[in-house]
Image (cartoon, rainbow, N blue to C red):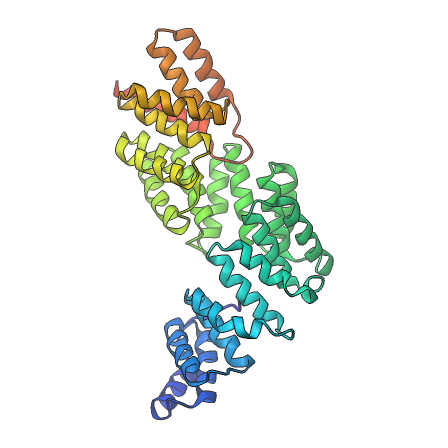
Amino acid sequence: MQALGQGPSKKLDQFLSYLHHDPTNVRLLLDTVEEALQCGQLSVCWDLSQRLVDLNREPDERQLYLASTSALATGHFDECIQWLMPAFQSESAPEWLVYNLSYAYFVQGDYQNAQQSIDDKPQFSDSSVPLNLLKGRIYLFQADYPSALEVLSRVLLLDKENTEALGLMSLVLLEQGQLEQALEQANLALSADALQTESLIVLASVYLSQLKVDESLAALDSLLSVKPNIGRALSLQAQAFLLKHRLQDALDTFEKAVVAMPDHIGTWHAKGWAHLIENDIEKAKDSFQKAYDLDHNFGESHGALALISYLKNDQEGCKHYLDRALRLDKNGFTGLFVKSLMLRQQGDEPGADRLIGSIMASSTPGAGLPLGQIIEQFVQKNQART
């Protein structure tokens, strides 16, 4: 999808004036949509694109490109797919059309059809940088990391200095827990593009896992100053605020993060812990429940709900969730933390101390949520209250 400009345009005003007198002029409509796209006037793009489609049911390539790009830019993904699908069936479908169709599926989370759209046009598989970048991103979101690395390596053979490919590769390596290699790729990308999105996320994630919170916040500030609605960056920033004991900033930022990224389990977990630290058990429960609803087989969700049950003196519920949590992950942070609370309640202070000590001493797994430090903050808050 092409980059959109911003701001008013005298040429656009002129075109709109002409359209007022000649509203069915297809060529004038096309020129106006193109100018509106370049100016970032998205509502104008969408209104005129619908008019274009209504006027011409057999669109040429230029009309399809402008209408579908307008649909993508304004979030009308189903309409984009509907408009592009007939032309996609042709063996001569151009590269941009395959990209726009696949991207429309991708942003809706339909990764299977996003990937299939690219695979159905194998003539582009060895030569198209944009399509291979998108395919690498699709594999990343499906957690198919080996395939993602293979496709991104192909991009780098075509364009060895492609910063997006380097950034995506660094993020894949981060997800695999290869922090050193991830940093190497991220720094390569950042040396050419200081605001490369995925590389800054990798940098911030690694810093946070090393508890270099100020460095993490600096990387996130750079990214969010130009792209303020990136969910993963907002989630990391909220976690960093939490570690800095800036509780209200953390809570406010978590709210933005879950709007931008409503299906991210880790963010719902971190948000739940922030609510526990502020002593709002019901809001914490709601956040942990959202995480549980997204994946019933994630041990930390069961552990978190066991903790909520414990705090509400629901012994039966606590045992139910804790048993499930430790079956799914015998080393799960939250499950072990709840187990330590129960040992203390039963009078086994040494056993509880050993268990809580092992939790606090544990390093953050990979570059994920620094749960040991957050649990420690929760314990300190609870001790202060009691």
